[in-house]
Image (cartoon, rainbow, N blue to C red; front, side):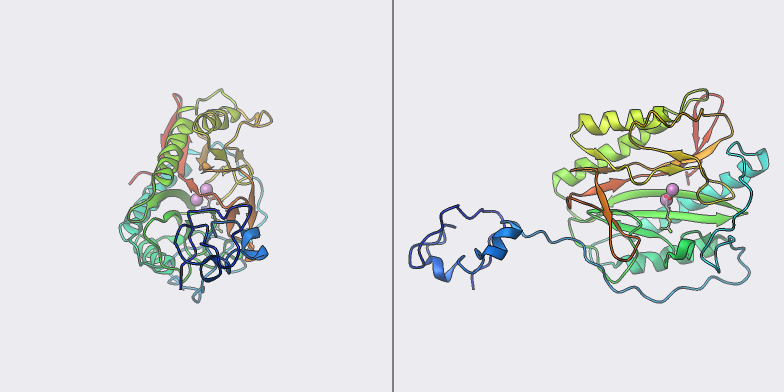
Length: 331
Ligand code: MF3
Ligand code: CO
Ligand code: CO
């Protein structure tokens, strides 16, 4: 059997059955590419995209009873408590420093296991133990019903990928998103990693996305509007011919996982909130090699690029200081 070529495109006018195939194999067309050149196959295009597909999700992991839990841990729904201030007290900031450091450590410890062949479910199990070892609760677990302790987002998955039975493949890129609930506050961080040998475009995507986060952080200045952050990020992505995902934003964080404060990663002139010392929020740009449009799988979580292009993300939790930003999610 001849394999369907992925690199070449069938010509508009196809050969007759007994003529040599258009692909240059020297074989008669009817014995070579004729089967692949059906109307259906041609609709799909010459390169059949092998996208990420849902795998099997293992049963829910338990957290020891002695570990303090956020209010949604059982019900799946965060309690409707009064709106908490975005400018945090010294006590909350102190606790966030510890939680954010722990989140960064869990990320490092889990990422050390990334290699072709490991399943995202195995990475989730490793992270789950790392949270618990530090006395923390995995914030994603049962947050609005999310079934796992971390998010694992591979290739065209933008964010909120659910760890499952799929093994990482050589050439993949994978984002691990870790959030810990420790000392009554959340610390949230993520990074994208190369699995084995990755093609240059993906490598460039991951590098530019990291730079977008750095530039977003550099734009944090008390007295300036939140929109400065997305302005800096979008400029860099655009210069590199990349897209900025709009459907998901950074967020205020502290005693609640996501507060009402939103941090768009594209330039949104409506993001007029003025940054003040003591505010804590995340910046977590999701950058694509293609368009910024996204859609969500039937599982209600997995967000993917609408055009199937690859996408990367980096995230830190930050504190606004008198001068700029302090990165809290450092190990
Ligand atoms: N950690 C993600 C963020 O950066 C949120 C994950 S929510 C979950 O905001 F439910 F998917 F875990
Ligand atoms: Co996160
Ligand atoms: Co976040």
